[in-house]
Amino acid sequence: MAKSFFILLLFAFVAYAQVQERVAILNTVDDSNPELDFTELTYLTNRLREIAVKMLPENKYFVMTSQSIVEMLGPERKEECKNKCMLDMGKAISADYIGQARLGRLGGNYAISMELYNVVRSNLIGSFTGNAKDVFGLVAVINENAPAMFRKMLGVSGGPIIEPGIGGVQIKGDDCAFSAVLI
Image: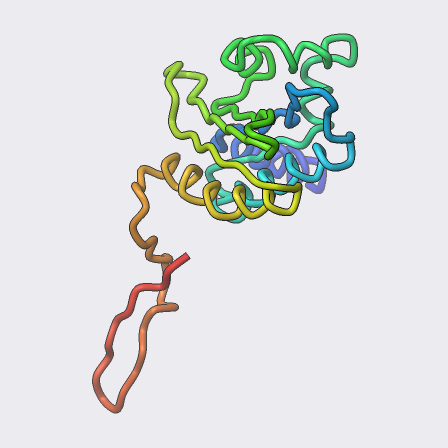
């Protein structure tokens, strides 16, 4: 009996995972010389992933980690992330969506550009660019622009998102008033 339950539970987990669409955010690349150090680039990438996890419903989207991307590629192909077309990389790692931020220099400032693609449809979903004097400014550019980019994956063009459930219900006496909860 316990073995049957375990097998049924395993099938349920597999079915749940297959419903989720995979979102891959490749490591941020610095195209300029001198490059930012590995720790700073990793922080920028992780910030993008963190925003994706917060913005995208976890029952529909699975944001891939660096480790899961490397495991799908194999360690010998890890370096290809820097130079290969993002859509090809997305197909190689079975991602439904793929994005990457690239850094450069613009008039003495850091410049960042981020693109997010639907791998299945081979189209650009969203992008943003910005510039800053330092890494903290780059983080501010990401914080300001990444949420709207990920909202586009949900089919939302920047308006408020109303959370499901009854969190927006306010009870006043015998009447109920509804309010939108902004994300």
